[in-house]
Amino acid sequence: MSSPQLQPEEFATPAADKLDDIVAMMREISRQSDPVEIFREYATRVRRIYPVDRVLLLRRSLSGDESIQATVIDDWEAPVHPWADSDRFQTITGGMLVSIFERGEATIINELEIDDDDNGRDYLADMRSLRAIPLFEQGEASQMIIGLKTEPQGFFEKDLPALVWLSNLFGRSIQNLLLAQKLKAAYQSVDRELKVIGEIQRSLLPERIPQVPGLELAAYYQASHRAGGDYYDFFPLPDGKLGILIADVSGHGTPAAVVMAIIHSIAHTYIGSHDPPSTFLNYLNRNVTDRYTAHSGTFVTAFYGVYDPRTGNFKYSSAGHNPPIRRRCGASDVTMLDKAGRLPLGISKEITYDDAEELLYPGDRVVLYTDGIIEATSPMDELFGTRRLGELISNCDLNTTTIVDSVVETLERFTQTSTLGDDRTMVVMKLQASMGHPLYGL
Image 1 (cartoon, rainbow, N blue to C red):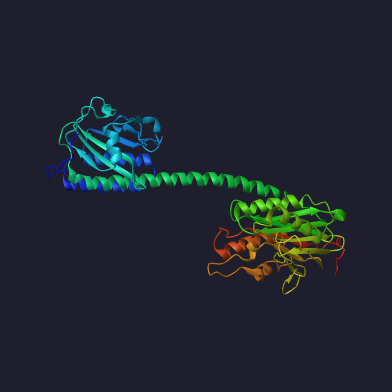
Image 2 (tube, one colour; image 1 turned 30 degrees about the vertical axis):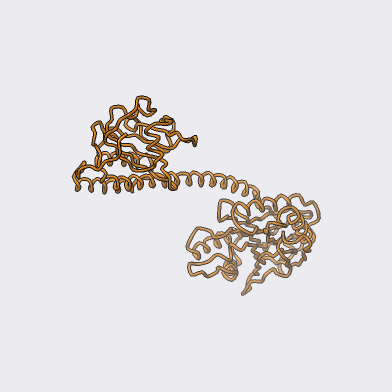
């Protein structure tokens, strides 16, 4: 094997044509997102600028030993994908090609002589000049492009710098695209899983709104991601009473959704009394703290109220949750249901929750909500707040579904985006002014 030699100053193609081809190649590569198309464009343009009779592609063996894998690109009828089409490569152990690859340097051999027992002889047959351009990854040659010519003295050392630059820019472009494809595939896989998680989570929410004499109800739930940590539920109770729960798990996404599912499971295993409501929150707190949140730092805010349609009484208990707002017909402002409150669920199982109650009157509107509603921000970083929420329930004639729609539309106008920064959930109650209501006429 002869040593690399300096050659006379001459170009394979005129300089102006070479520049035009390089610019055209770079322009076309910038448009591509498919590694196969980038390789095709590169191979076509470079071969036009620096003509050869045969092109080999070498790469390090996937087995991790000292062998390499080689393929003759000219023999490929289908589009080339050198980083993926492993079945088109043959393994070579020892010989000139392995030696050149292991050196990992740009090399020219203009008097090529092949030993009869060289393992790469079939790839080099009838060739008299060789040019090797390494492609680097993490500081080592991972692939190598071998150009071959049938005549001796076929390559020029002055072409090596440009070829090394061009080839490694091309190689990096391919690697970046392959990485982008892997990331996209991984994201799509995770997104599919999150979509399933979100569907499962939404299946845990009430399938239908319960019918309670004299009480109109509507609910809204929207996760900021595929799945979220907000939760609401209804519990039909003896004597026609209705339990209403709203909760918000700290954090977002899948972890919060898992805890939300746990809360749902614990809530639906409760067989004790719901009067007073604090007994229910005490049960939730003990179980979620003991089994799940004591060492994770996760907590859950929750509000649980029990409405009695026979009396209009609404007993409630709160675990660090945003107090619901109540507005009476003709009232100039809202009142907050904030007379009972303790720390969120999941912080300490020793916490004992307290209770309070409100007498609701015909026409009263009560909104239970999570912080994603009132903490939504405008482009000027202004909070939506309870004042705006209270204004949206000022009209005594609106039904609960209309109130929910109004809040959602107003939030989108206020934030100027349909993208949620946090989960949003609300339950709207309205007492109907009907002859059947025990407080009709008050």
